[in-house]
Amino acid sequence: MPGRSSFPGRSHRLGDEKVIDLSCDLGFLRLRNPVIAASGTFGYGLEMAPFLDLNCLGAYIVKGLYLQPRTGNPPPRLVETASGLINSIGLQGIGLEPFIETILPKLRKYSAPLIINVCGESDEEYGAIVERLEKEQGIAAYELNISCPNVKRNGLCPALSPEATYTVVKLAREKSRRPIITKLSPNVTDIVSIALAAQEAGSDAISLINTILAMAVDVETRSPLLANLFGGLSGPAIKPIALRMVFQVARVVKIPVIGCGGIMTGQDALEFLLVGARAVEVGTANLIDPQACPRIIKEIEQYCLNRGIKKIEDIVGSIILEGI
Amino acid sequence: MASIERQAKILQHKSWGNYHRLKILAPEIAEKATPGQFVMIRINETFFPLLRRPFCLHHCHGDEIEIFFKVVGQGTAQLAEKKEGDFLDIIGPLGRGFSLPEKPDKRPALLVAGGRGIAPFVFLAHELKRLGQSMIIFYGGKTREDLPLIEDLEKNGFNLRLSTEDGCLGFKGLITELLEKELPSLNPACLYVCGPEAMLVEVARISRTWRLKAEFSLEARMGCGFGVCYGCVWPIRQGEKIEWTRICLEGPVFPAEAIAWEMKR
Image: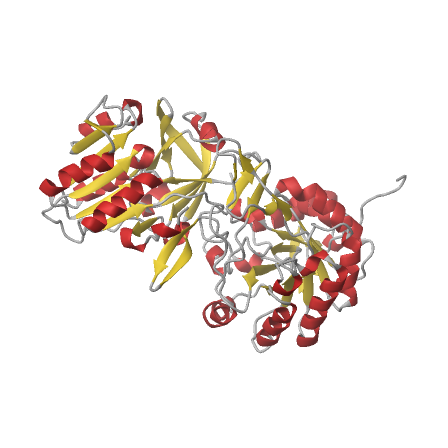
């Protein structure tokens, strides 16, 4: 019988003495647990409120914001592939000021940390959005989406080079008193050099991976299945790639790493923690089950309970590499 | 507000070739649903299909809901394998359904269905009947096999107009041709429309020509069904502008004039 989950909080009493501490320290921010709802799979937060208590989350990241409203790409925008989903939404969104006016006030009543995913068509746009949001209360951190096509870089996104990553992060850093998380793209040759550039520019944390550039074809019509031709692959199909990249980055950078890519279960999340992530982002799973995050929190807790682990932080980076 | 029924039991599975109807015990959804709304069903726990699939509510009564579908891909093929006694994980009711008359209109409502587009109309027809609104159901398909619900509908006393493209049953031709032929004598109150896109385009033209109020139930691939992924958009007029609009939240039913057909490829 799948009963109501007990409230997945910061710590849990076990018997009389034992308490599991699920909280995780991102240096700049202490989360009640390591599960963060990923941008683009959680709307602006409010759409999910009918299905779960937002306050049970470690944090949540709203849909990417540009200064201006965005129309997004024409449909079809989605195609399902083996264990995965390719999307080409095109970052459709309401724009910064409507978000501040109509959404942000409603989100302030929730206690879970709100992280704003910041987009930009130019390097300067990232700085401008952060500068504007600095005047607003109720925001815990920014996540820079540096995988946006950049008009002044021939449509290439900053995430593809260490130099461009450095420039964008630096511009946002100079405008922000709040913590900055930089979300990396997996569509690069040397992920570590990009992560180091973000760290060097003053990013407080790294999140990875964003979706993997992909396509799908219909043999009946001989045409691509996405109107936009390419899209970003997410879901369980990408988890092994994401794990490898998180492992590579976490052992090199000094700032916290947030792991992301195909997490469907508590076990998936634990794999990311083992290779060095301090927290995880859950994405595609939210679409399939709007209660995926609370379930994953509970499964992580159960894992700790079964093994007598008192602090989830003891798991972080504890992968055993002897003999390798 | 939508509910999640984790253990919704299949009470009855009836099939006609590629067409299937499932009767499912889902009291929380049944209690709240209105005609034209839909549910998202997790067909299996496996990673393929990974996403839920959307199905409009075919009927609702007491604690039960019904869905009616045609096997069109791997998701519906797996769903067609389900047996009575199996369980499904269902979210619903979702979306905005058809608008219903506040008081019965003497003129009939016309329900225009192409093939599996009949799906939302059994629920709607029963609701209109309850409200005392007269109606005629236009039900067309390629051939007889595409019209499996004729007997059921007749048994319930609904007034039908049938068409098949091969002429084996009813009017020979498209349901839109039959509709246009009969319109002059019917003087309908409004149209409710569901079917393949080419049919919708044609009915949109007809409703413009005859200045008829019409509501369309739209279909799209959906990622979530509750508004967070922005995958299921149609071009919808919002005031002066045309915007890619989530049909899961703002639809799936829209007035004919709101749909910007020129933006569809």
